[in-house]
Image 1 (cartoon, rainbow, N blue to C red):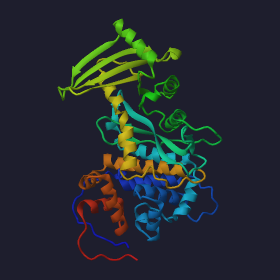
Image 2 (image 1 turned 45 degrees about the vertical axis):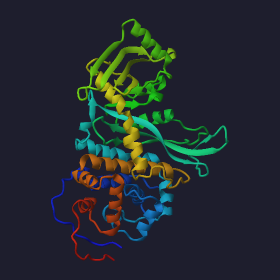
Image 3 (image 1 turned 120 degrees about the vertical axis):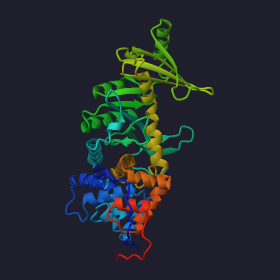
Amino acid sequence: MTYSMNIIKKVPPKVRKHLSADALFSTVHGSFGKIVDHRTNPTISLADSLMSAFAVFSLKDPSLLAFDERRRSGDPNLHSIYKIGSVPCDSRMREIVDKVDPKDLGDAFKNIFNQLQKGKALEPFEYMDGCYLLSLDGTGYFSSGKIKSGACMMKTNKKTGKVTYYQQMLGGSIVHPDFKEVIPLNPEMIIKQDGETKNDCERNAAKRFFEKLRQDHPRLPLIIIEDGLSSNAPHIKDLNRHNLNFILGAKPGDHKFLFSYVASAHEDGKVTEIRCADPKDPKITHFFRFINNVPLNASNQDTLINFLEYQEITPKKTSTFSWVTNFTITSENVFKIMRGGRARWKIENETFNTLKNQGYHLEHNYGLGKKHLSENFGRLTMLAFLVDQVQQLCCALFFAIWKKYKSKRSLWEKIRFLFHSFLFDSMEDLYRALLIGIKRKPVELID
């Protein structure tokens, strides 16, 4: 049952016109509207079907059944806020979205990113030498011992013989050490590729990710930050080929030659060492050790990198980190490189942890489908997260209601409640109602 309502008239925080939720929903809908629909005489447009699926993840509905109950109740906000003409039932939605080529969803990410650039909202994320930090890592989003599809990879437990079917994604987010917000890009799925019998892997997914990244953003200056698995010669050559800077983790166990080389160079006095107290906390000491133009490993001595080892020393413990980078390391930029390398964790905490534990239900199985359903749902989840992160970064109204309700989960619950209970002309009006309140007077029932 949906009611009309009146919002208490107070001046709310300002909303940036082209970066508001409503403007971004229009951008997403417009992107979907440009995808070619190869069906003959469809009763529900492809744009409406994709926008309905997007609304599932935007509203953080726990299941397609919950969304379908919303559809059956004739929720008018799906039309007024998400601009959906005809809302498909859950089974019809699965059928349509399953057949959409995942590549066609990329423009929605790119168009929102372009809006960020035009609105100069990306500028604060500039980190070093005019570049942005792009943190990259893989995560699982489906796993089952019974359910599978043709896109699922498979692993067998050697002791028990138990088979697990799973799918993963390689996610990339623009991050900054000083910001909680992240800007996720179009992810690359780590799934069994068409025509392949072997499992996919993160390294192959990274190759595809970089190709698409440079197709969408050919001149975007980036610094790729990744964990220790990435600091290998083939991967570094891929980064160089795509004109991507890098700060990659490096561990002694994986790079015995490199660490031995640095130790010998240290004995010869070729390694620079810097020790300094933290300017904000005198109990913390920073210790840096670096050397430039050294071979990555014995078999790739033509692959030269710059090596940095860092220790954070406190009275209780000493934490040690090390990286390889293409930036020439100096006493002036060593602290900046260290902070950039340590920002890698934001892809795990600020991206994947949020998607899995703050209401986005990333690991929930909304359906595997026969072709691309699970992959497309994964991308739409990330797209909804992107819209929310832009709101968190750019919309004072959104930030105010988040602060009011303290947690994201609580905020999503309040949004779903008002969305189901009252008729709104826009998401901005719904945000205002959450922040300021609704007049306490009888309301008119909408048939």
